[in-house]
Image (cartoon, rainbow, N blue to C red):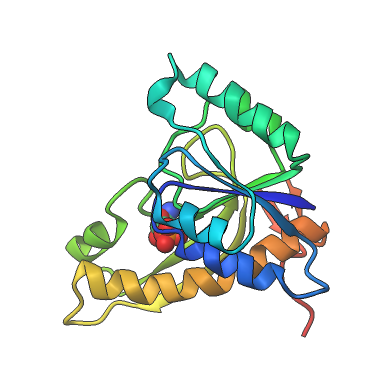
Length: 203
Ligand code: GRF
């Protein structure tokens, strides 16, 4: 699958996906990295790694539809047929999401359906939960929803701050995202109703 990664910032999950996709038998090729922020640190790194990049600055478009039309045009040019959202901080419209349903996945730094939205580590600490984690899921129009492909749990420790907890979660993100991409892009995983089956790797 010719895969695009959408980012808005740091791009550490992008790096993990690019690294994994270098394996010769990996079922997805990272053919494009696109960012809505031209100054995203990840964009420069992707370029340095020899990957095609696109900066689609949402601020120069009249609205979401024009922004997404431009994104779609770039995806067409690069013949992209799968999308990974990795720290992409723009909400996508139902029109775009529907077009990519089953072919677009996202990573979220919490155990969905808990802690949708922003500041997940702060909120988990404030609630005193003992287990936190991350989720890779198919994207549907509703934010941070959609069939779950993979999750990883981490313990919340007594002396955690949002930063230490976030770092523990991020380590797991970098492990589960490439695995989830492999499962989804290979067709091994598929959606049955609200669930994803077949995502687990054979032992
Ligand atoms: C990650 O925690 C991801 O789960 C969330 O935004 C963060 C992006 O980090 N959606 P990075 O840009 O991949 O380093």
